[in-house]
Image (cartoon, rainbow, N blue to C red):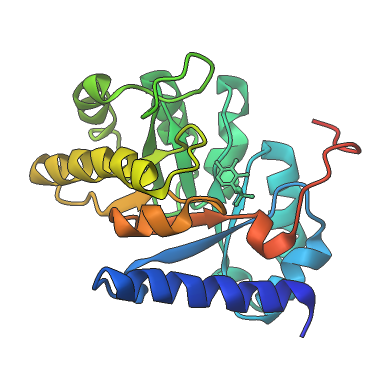
Length: 237
Ligand SMILES: *Cc1c(COP(=O)(O)O)cnc(C)c1O
């Protein structure tokens, strides 16, 4: 087993453990392996260990990786999640290549994704990003802005509104982490009343995964714990 495969094993065990501690079924929590800045060889190792869902932050890098694996025998099993900030001039590549988009924060982007989703592909699954810690610099909308954006995007034909995503401000205290994530859980519950297709809560990274699972996360996005620390020094983006 390679290091990445051992790491994957460990993360899967941690997910199962966290789920059991709060009486959740571990199957309700999907693991998104965040492979940004990592080479295709690292992704291949994860695929060989059974991982099928991957998250990418940079449009062109993500598309290059999707295309790298497009001719493989397992291509149809792979699920690609766009989890980075998206400018409106890059929406077409996301619409044409990805299965999920986690960072929707304005109607214009939703409209373009729906318009640009190719006929013959299933609708793009989208999550609205919530700025739960209300940091000035971070992307996402506030919970107060959620009802309007949810109503706007849920009528678009080629995207499906599936739920919410958040990246809270770093917080060392696990109890505080849980309290912040609980606000997301409540918001999701309220949404479900109006939007029956809403079922997804994307939250939890390497440093706050257990707290996110405790507060109802259904998708954890894990990079460092699987692929190791990232090196941005040679990045082109
Ligand atoms: C990089 C990134 C992750 C993974 O973070 P780690 O701390 O390495 O697990 C998850 N979500 C988003 C949106 C990211 O940009």
